[in-house]
Image 1 (cartoon, one colour):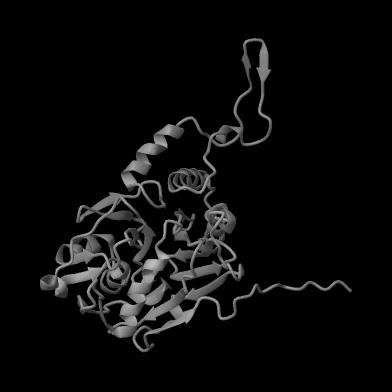
Image 2 (cartoon, one colour):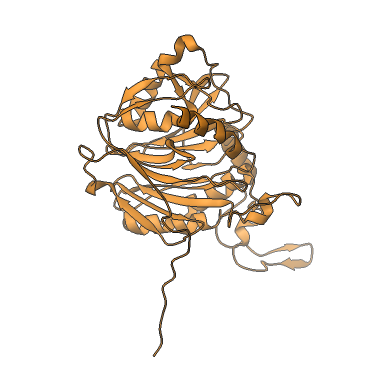
Length: 354
């Protein structure tokens, strides 16, 4: 228990304002549902692992005071990608196709206050994905189940919101504001960080003039005007790394992305789209700050909910790796975790010309 609590306390280092993330979703012609995201921290290594939770695994939540919180047993096997320690699943999927990810949500969210009297029904915010994925199969089940628990913050500066989706293609955004759960239907298939999700949707109205392709030629008085290059219809699309700008850019990229044939093609398309959201390390840190990380974007994941495939690449190795959940026997495998990079170096395919 002491080791775990130390992990919780150490998390305060990892939830600095530089912690950012962008999530998108796509659907293939064959019906495959794809959820993808980046995760960023420019100051600290997230020590991310892929985590396997078997059915029947007994688990419990940490609490802010170090007491044991909610205890639960996994009904579904889970494959997740963690931050800091294996209990903190940042993105994951279960056997039934329920998928959930957490995204930093500073200043606008707040949880219920923790009380030792209610510890047995309290679940830490950074373990909520672990609990939801081991317990439920659909978004509706999650919404009903949340009525029976109290979500509390494990660290005062760590406020997150969640994207939750299931195999039907439905997805919602869950935010805790003033201690109450708010669900928003995700009609654009995109999520970033603060402010609240409904604010981001309203903000899209500021970009009603944007359209794919080129703007039409016109005259300003006697002066003819024409595009200086392709894609002038998107002139004004924000390109900075703030959450509102990333949300707008991601929403238009997703809305204009051509629908591809199958899950594999669409998963690769998601990687291409999210390449535009990689954040170079230099723009994230001030002139007096130092970092040893190669990129603020520490990893990118793509999860195929329909075919139970988890793809990812990292800042250390851009080669795409894939884990097929269908090959995992969640009734026999042990609870385990492994670093996302066994070796932190880029694999390079050498081409020899003779």
